[in-house]
Amino acid sequence: MSKPVRAAMIGLGFGSEFIPIYQAHPNAEVTALCRRNEAELNKAGDQFGIEKRYTDYDAVLADPEIDFVHINSPIPDHAWMSLKALDAGKHVMCTVPMATTIDECRQIVEKVEQTGLKYMMAETVVYSREFLYIKELYDKGELGEIQHLAASHPQDMDGWPSYWEKMIPMHYATHVVSPCLGLTNGLAEYVSCFGSGKVRDSIAEKSGNKFAVESCHIKLQDSDVVAHIWRFLYDVARQYRESFDVYGTKKSFEWTLIENEPHVIHTAKKPEPEIPEKVEIPDFAHLLPSEIQKFTLPSEIHDADHLSFIQGGGHGGSHPHLVHEMVSSIVEDRSPWPNAVTSANWTCVGLCAHESALKGGERVTLPEFTLKR
Ligand SMILES: NC(=O)c1ccc[n+]([C@@H]2O[C@H](COP(=O)([O-])OP(=O)(O)OC[C@H]3O[C@@H](n4cnc5c(N)ncnc54)[C@H](O)[C@@H]3O)[C@@H](O)[C@H]2O)c1
Image (cartoon, rainbow, N blue to C red; front, top):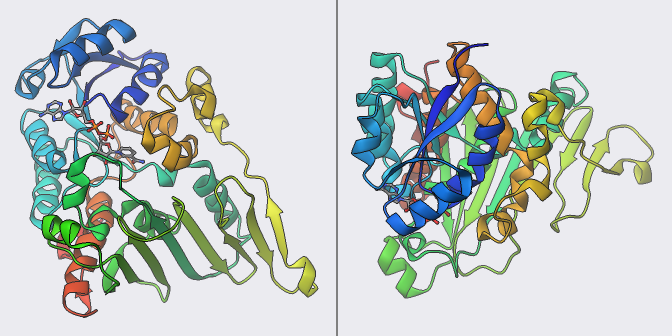
């Protein structure tokens, strides 16, 4: 067996969730932990039995015993931390989004090209059991030709850390962009987005964004298909949802309106009352090494009280799939999915969408560096 891939976990809120999975993975280990608060760092180190503990990110990067960093710090830190890690010769897995500016995305893509290191954005949605189920239907031809895609991510952020008040809805759009593009492994070519309604003044002042809802159409490259995504962060009444609807010539998949109720498959050309059928989504743990299969289950979520799980529906059992993809890409020396270019395309859709909304819905083309494989 090959030597284990040695990870350092950066940020121990959501990040802690992944530690037991790496520890159980046959080809990985968590060599070090990093967070700024020393007391909390030691608490996590003791809990997971990890001796190497750093409060200083630069010290992690100077450690020759670390192969890659898994970054779970707050959003404004994703880009600079990824760039510094690549400069230090470390592979990077980073939680979403890749960055908050197009220029930072470009820098990460260029650095990955220059160094040959791996970069993967840890997008939970495209490793959720729902996405894997729809993808299997698509790959088997059961949906027929795709005619339209739609996704929504309504999220009321009152009660979350205050840095969210500075965020713009479409700057955190990868949970809706990724399934629409990931299903056919397509890339976005251009977008047109409208802002709708308005947030309270105190939020608008902090974020510089007045729109409550941002609603965007995405034109897929080399395809006649268009996707529609929408999103809000404040001041709209709706339960949390990361929905994904797919409309095909033979079958369509529609996400449930209410969390934990069944999703629906529509089949063409049946008698009208028989067209919709409620479906039970199977689990996809069989794609994983046996040692980490149990982590697709909600009961294995380490901190189930964390708002991100209460609102995120447990992320569809995606966590062990993300760990396995990143570790396998290093062991097999191949590009992870999504790699840097795909992650940049998915992230830049949201960045371009907000730009479009500010110009009243004008078409904005994705930057060239996100359109080449
Ligand atoms: N479904 C998903 O993909 C999903 C779900 C939840 C969270 N997230 C993302 O994960 C990230 C973390 O979310 P969270 O809820 O755990 O946030 P959090 O604020 O609870 O935790 C952030 C952690 O990062 C650490 N940190 C911050 N700056 C650091 C630095 N300079 N060096 C080392 N450590 C540092 C903090 O000490 C803390 O442990 C966010 O970017 C969030 O968007 C993604």
